[in-house]
Image (spheres, rainbow, N blue to C red):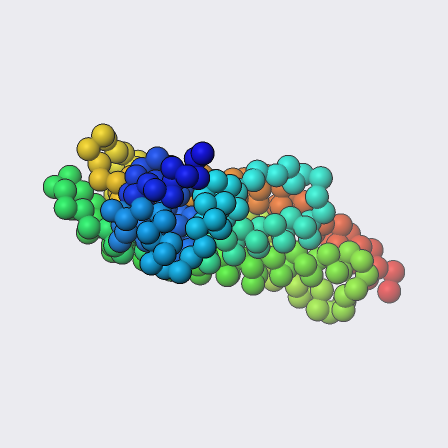
Length: 251
């Protein structure tokens, strides 16, 4: 019954019912703010989309599942793969969607003119810094942990391992990581903690909801790294150091 009503519902109303609908529609090439007056069925015809497929995704959106898994018992390589998958979702899905919302932000409302201006300056800088941080983390921290895993299994060159241990230290990675734990502080200040009222335009409500949910995802992500990945990695690092120095002492 819901599918019948949805297909005859204007896009703007669908999104007002549930802001997640805007995210789902975006990945079918439908920017809700460009088709707000058309019904879902009309937009699907216009875009050459299968209405049934769009309705299925709106009912149970696979793109937005943000499961909080209990990773404590997982081996360290699977935790890294989980975090890398989250990085992929952030960079390839969440950030482009939010960037589109910011770029198309047209306040037409005195209370949001300054916010529109500031976000259009700050958000691209945030994205650039965030992506740099993600790739740096994968290239340095994750690579180092992978090398420790190989060394713990006896697969290492003693000279290379010595320089690797000299060059890296997980406690330094951890302290540097804490500096990035509140990356959205500036955006929170601009948006006054994503404050909305009954008169806030729909576009802004959707944008603020996405920014707020993204921040929640980053908090979960940081907790997994700080409370699960780093303790496991530090234990692994200590094990490798012990194995290395025991072996070199008897050679």
